[in-house]
Length: 228
View 1 (tube, rainbow, N blue to C red):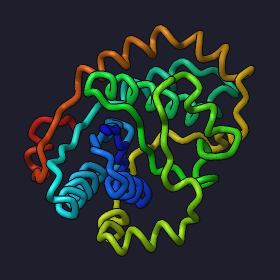
View 2: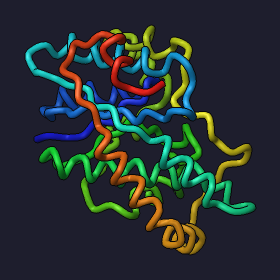
View 3: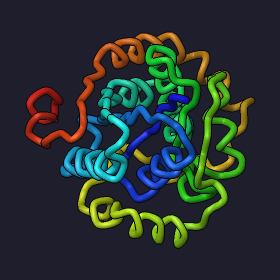
View 4: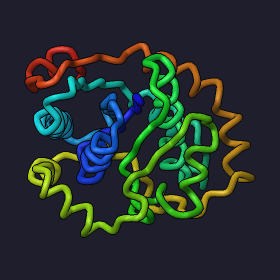
């Protein structure tokens, strides 16, 4: 079964991808490139982690797909008004799932797999987890949802991902000071439908921007074609 595995460059997503592979999924590794809202070093980490996943699973040919996401983030930032800015992470995550679903449909995948851990990020609270997948109908799997951070770190070290995951570089720099942790559909839905046309247009453009790399791949090969 093909599944889109979202890879951020952090500790959790490579572990989730590895668990998916161990359970028989054929992963399509997908990274959202948040230029210009990302930190230096993020792509270097993602490439290194993708190569490590490929090395650990050498019997399965793997590729890394990189999709731009900065345009979506810009539309969200420009579209939210006043206190709505607290919803930034929720809308960003909602669009990530939406684009992952479209990408999965294009590639014949039947699920989207993430490294979300209960309560670790603003978008990963008990209230927000159903919100971020409320606009998709593809199966969303969260292999780490019952793990605590120490257990995930232990697996990351065991499988050789931890040292790469903690290198400098973060995937997002637009987090609001006080992000929403208890999202409600009666608040989110009117904003979503107000922004949906603009978000759909930019998402379609970013879907067309996807670049695929057969693993292993060098950082230079990625930087030659991906804007930083």
